[in-house]
Every structure is written in C-alpha cells, then in structure tokens.
Image (tube, rainbow, N blue to C red):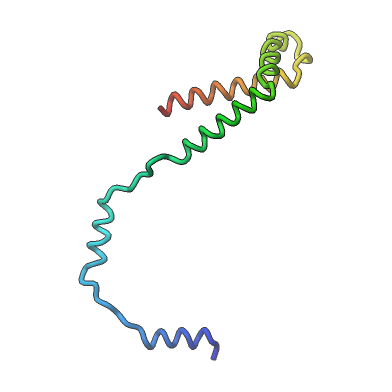
Length: 110
C-alpha cells in the first residue's frame, strides 16, 4: 500500500464534522453587503506620476525637445517629397500623436 493511500485512509477513518448552525450562510450574507475597502492612495496613479516625471526630466536633459522641434519643423516638406521623411520627422510625428492621444484619454477619464 502506498504512503498516499495510507494517509487518505487515515483521514477518511478519522473524519469529524462540526455543525455550524447556519454560521457560514450568515457570514457570507454579511460579507456580501460590506463595502470593499479602498486604499488611501491609488498606487497606479503614483507610479504613473513618477515615471512621467522621470521621462519628462530625461527628455529635457537629453535634448529631446530640439529633435522634436526640428522634426516638426520639417513636417511640411514631407508632403511635397516622401523621400525627405527622415527618422526625426517620423519620430516627432509619432510622439506628437501619442501625446495628443494621451491628453484626450486623460480628459475623457477625468
């Protein structure tokens, strides 16, 4: 006989039951009507704020604004000649669209 079978047989032979007199039902009925506790501060907003601030700081320190302005200033020439689309222009357009999307999403949520 395996060890697992011996353990199962032991517990089957020595099984005990405790009457709860409706305690479980009353407990779950009480838990269903209790309000869900809310945290004092929402962690996701804090994390988003920290990463946003670090990202903005790195963008400013590493001169990202110069590349963005240069790319956006050359944006008009892309329509005249598609070969003049440099990576700076494409990245500037991409980040501008992302910024507008995130601002719109923030405005809708709040």
